[in-house]
Structures are given as structure tokens and as C-alpha cells.
Amino acid sequence: MKVAVIGTGRVGGVIAPNIGQAGHDVVFGVRDPADPKYAAAGQGVPLTAMAYAGAWADVIILAINWDAVDGALAALGPIAGKILIDPINPYDFMNNLAPLIAPDQSAAQLLQGKTDAVVVKALNQVGSGVMADAPQRRIKPLQFVAADDAAAKAKVIGLLTDIGFDARDAGGLDYARELEGMARLWIAQAFGHGLAPDIGWSLTGPDA
Image (tube, rainbow, N blue to C red; front, top):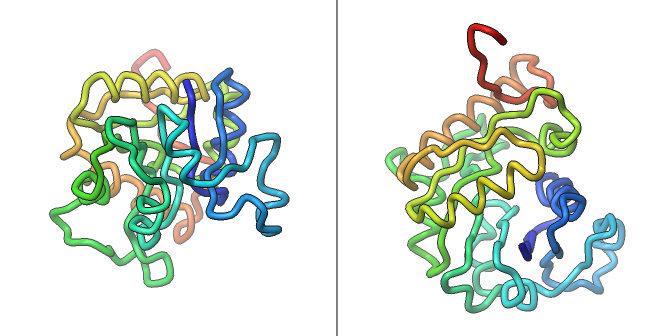
């Protein structure tokens, strides 16, 4: 699978190397690969222009902030039919996690209205500390995946399984709102109530 990670920040910077180590082809997509600010971002993952990344990839992970979405989509160019993973949590991190969109909407559904790619909600429910070492954990962190396209969702579940998650089907894209709320709760616990930022969700049963 060819995967382009758009953004080299906390999420993109840890997800891309894990994808490569799992045996997939992966690149970063950035505005200007020659910009010195990206010099330490590669970690062995090639830096490419966003338009190249968009044309090359089968799967695109939009690891950016909500306010950067329109610019990123424009820079990516035509991506019709490609899988676009949305890890975005549309909250104001400087204002007590105030929502940036209406309460009856999700970033994923709004994003789907902006693109003819197939949007899949995933990789948003825990922080980068969990994502970084998920492949090494004995108990795999839970990661729900929501999408309206069953084939795209199955591919993303497979990719997330490859990089160490207990990936589960969350239903259609209308469930993205719940997944974003799940993330808001995790963020509030991690940064306001003492939850260690490398703690993730998991499922348990009577024998666990």
C-alpha cells in the first residue's frame, strides 16, 4: 500500500515511520520539501511536495489542524477515489477544547463535503505517545474506524492493524462525531486530569 502522510507534526511524525516499518511504502507530503524546517522530520521517510504525494498515494493521512484543511486539499490536487484518513479533532486547544464546528457535525463529514476522495475517520482517538509505540505494546490500543465505504474502511482497518492497533469497525461516517467526542474526552483527561499521555483505550472481557 502506498501511503502519503500530510504533515510532519506530532501525529504524522510518529505514524509515518511505523507505516514504513510495517512494510508499506510511505512518504511525507509537505508544502516545500527543501524548507529547512523539515530537515529533522523525515526519520527515513522521504519528503515530497504535496501534489506529488497526492498523485502517488493510494491512502492519504491528513495529519494537520482543522484550519489548514482547505489549503491542504488545494495543494494535493486531484485525489478522486483515493482513501483520505481524517485524524482531525476540531477543537480549540487554547480555549478549553471549545468545538470549532457545530455540535451536530463532524470534521470528517464536513471534509467529505470538500473532496471527492473517500473519507475515513481514524487515528484521532488517542495522542501521539500511544501511536508511537503501538507496534511494541502487548495490549494493543483500541482504534475505531468510521466510513461509509466498506472497502475503504476494511483497508484502513488492515493498515491500522499492521501498525499495532486493535482496529475496530465503528460504522458509517456519521459515527465520526462520536469518535471526535471520544478524542475530546481523552485529551481532557490527558491534559487536565492527570491521565498519562501514553495511555490508550482498550477493550476488556471477563477473562482479561
